[in-house]
Image (tube, rainbow, N blue to C red; front, side):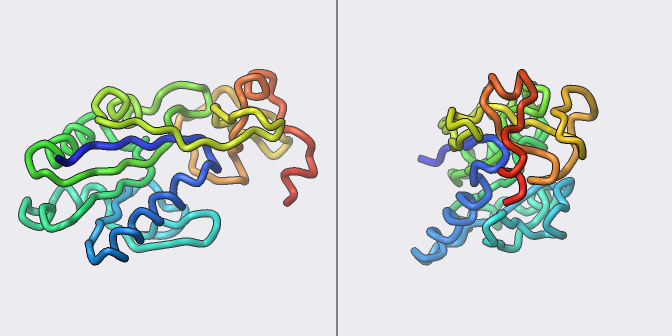
Length: 194
């Protein structure tokens, strides 16, 4: 029986690398998994899912996935969605129908919360609807579990106000434990120069 998975973690927790490895595992077994991402995510170029460690694979945008006919979606062994926090409640509802009606497993990867510690709409819907919710863990610079996505400016100040979505990677975000997110402590500066 197919299931809807939500695998979440903070920035830098290897969510995308995990998604690409899962896709590769399907391919290695002679099965095809479809990579999907919201069109909003253009950091790595168009129709590409890429991890910080250099893994990359072609994908389609979520709105293109929505337009696929049922018989085409059913031929995939799995649907893998990266950057799922950018989905809408309606998008997640569609994914539940893919799982429940067409028996195709869907694995979503994304952030749970934004830089303010608030749920993204897609993450909120996935937390409510997913059959299996798994955390992909990483650590703060201090060694504690990182649970917050800190956005910082060019002066290394942790920001707590602004637009929910500002695309970026290590140049704008870092995973911190709650204590260091709350105090705005990004850690020793030399750690950010690696």
